[in-house]
Length: 135
Length: 135
Image (cartoon, each protein chain N blue to C red):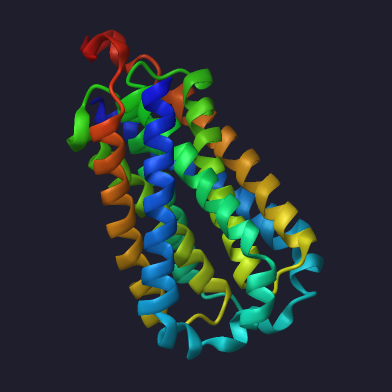
């Protein structure tokens, strides 16, 4: 594994996931989330939010490195879609047990699909030439 | 394809039974302590099909990721994939903890169950699904 490229891909994925999360879940879906105020903290616990994004970016990068060793935006974007489908399954279960609105459910599903597909593509594009040097 | 379908059904049945036993029976009291964050039991029963669909989606995505990039590695590869996917799920739980007033104890217990679930699912899928050249 090319650790230098891995590190760059991880940092880029973290930057994208955090920015997308802020824009999509924090800004665009703010109104939808306000429909269920009892489910939300009055103020997000930022250290946990940042830590969650770091872990997510790291393991998504690791998964791409193991899953698509040759890299490439297309292959890793495909993996991103499959990861998003796992999250979609979890979203449906959350919807069944928590008093979420269908608007929130749809927003989360679309958000997951977009963020993991793009994050996968970013990781794949940065990590792609590794195999050529290691094979 | 036959092994893919068998692996999917085996993983889905396990995830369903484990979800019921662990989250529905063993963690019943822990969930009751945070009742304000969840739907009443009757309402959950009315939306139970979403839980089943979500778990089926989760199992299907797991097998698809395994078949696309991990097949051939057997049980060990299935377990590795399960661990990576569960850590990704934990990263999402960190974000839920940051934004929703979940008791930390409940999320830790859910994550322990999640690890067991994904590791066993990995064992099942790794044992059943074999790529064509290995059959």
